[in-house]
Image (cartoon, rainbow, N blue to C red):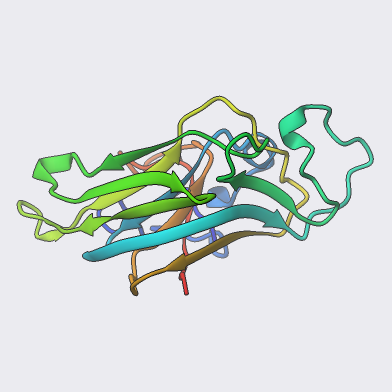
Length: 193
């Protein structure tokens, strides 16, 4: 249940799509995703996530598949958005960001090893806020993403080494008016086994 109106302090949606269609993913963002990100946010704890791939699923087959090489991964029903295999058309450059707001002390790393994206770190309370900060790994290149406007869901093929309650997935960079100062894009909580 994605929303582009999320709390800066918890990452939880301030408005949800089921109740307010203005915060639902729009066709323009789904046609041109621009960026994707994985967050550890709103819950103090250890982030230790290995990501194999990110895909959009339940997609309608396209009569006119795009010619771009990085979009050739379309399989009719699933569209691979990101993998971590060097040289793969869906491999992206990722950048990790730690919470810089009001003395945030959360730290993390993002590396690629053995064809997996490794997102690791600690989300800790921001001392001045007495609430958890965040860490985030986000694509930082200009490699295009496939059009996922005909898809019904996003699947993250990942596993966590330890339980953590603050995983979030985000795509796009649209910013809902009057919702969030720092956060942009459509975000949703996910659980990793």
